[in-house]
Image (cartoon, rainbow, N blue to C red; front, side, top):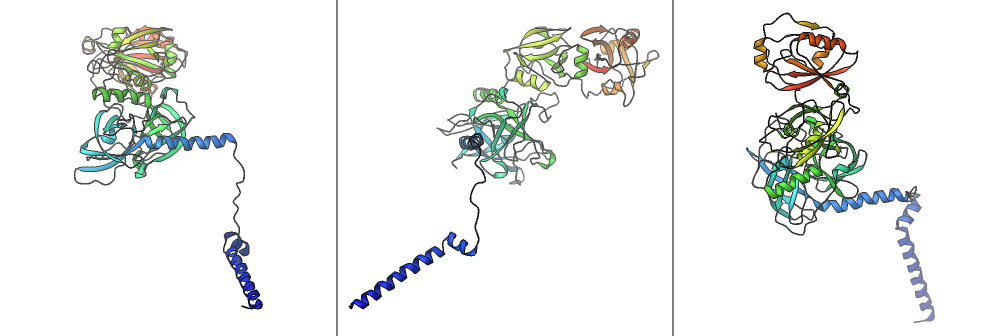
Length: 506
């Protein structure tokens, strides 16, 4: 080959290499967009502070830790009634057949060998071999029900597995309003879903687990972390990765979907129930044996209390633990075992974590001072703890033929003396019979009703006997305008109750 030919070849190769480089660069993003005069901004506008970055990492770390500890539960169950509680958020698709329906929920791994915490309403009425559990790693297991408790809506199921990642259970007594929480579960069939929010209230009672005797324990943690059908039985966790509650209900009404608030059973209560279910297959609560109501400003003023919160003892169960320990009707309970109680549901939850035979220490306000009573609890067969005693009771209208009634116009009711027949009917010797109550009156607001007996009052913490109409008139005249008092009444069924009313009465 001639020298000239060699030089020509070298030039052509060089040109080819340069052209290739140009073509390659032309098809890179930078070159193409530069030629088209199009570019994207990929620079972060600012660098978050170390604290914000750490918070973001905390959420991510907690989700990564807790997700494997929450399971997906599929259940085939006997079809439920059409009036299914609208607050439950158990995901129920179309029925599988005439009598079988399939739904989904969530559960929390309690132990490495397969005990799982969930809601009773998730596994309730499950058919044989109708519960399937799917773990975070997609392994599937058949599950059986170990035990369930209708009064707390807690259940425990079991799968045959080992070396599972058990959840860390926190202390729900330490939960504070405003702290960050995360809800972990399987809403609407979307497995391993994590949402975040804050605790928006504690000790919430929403009236979804009450039976006719008021035995359900409702002391929910309220949060605004988004939950939906399928989250039932899932974990509510704090930013330390501890489970502080079992997601149980929503404030969704008949819509059946999340509208802003959800409710979780506190883990301390759920843990106490779960331990008994695993050990005995059932949960037996302890009871004080009292009928109770919440203390409001009127009751507190009438009792001469320095706080406006607590639980009022309306009446005692015969042969109950409270009566045996010296608790009296008209007492105000302000703490249990040194922990304050602000309402009936809190008292029921604290006492409900103990068993028959165990003791509780009650701090009581009586006659203008505090005292302590130690109560040895009894079982449900002996007594019932009833919340809001005396509320919405229907009084049979049984006319009693006695002398002319005396009217207390400003309060809107009238009373008359007791006849011998009335005394026998109510099993009481002294008092006055309510003859009439006007509509929309202060007396009606106080829940006074016709044909009940007023036989005592409490004013500024002191008890006043009402033996006759003249006693009651004297008592009414002695009251200052705006003063709150408690009228103790006896019902036709011989139960007693305390009704708060403000002066003036006449």
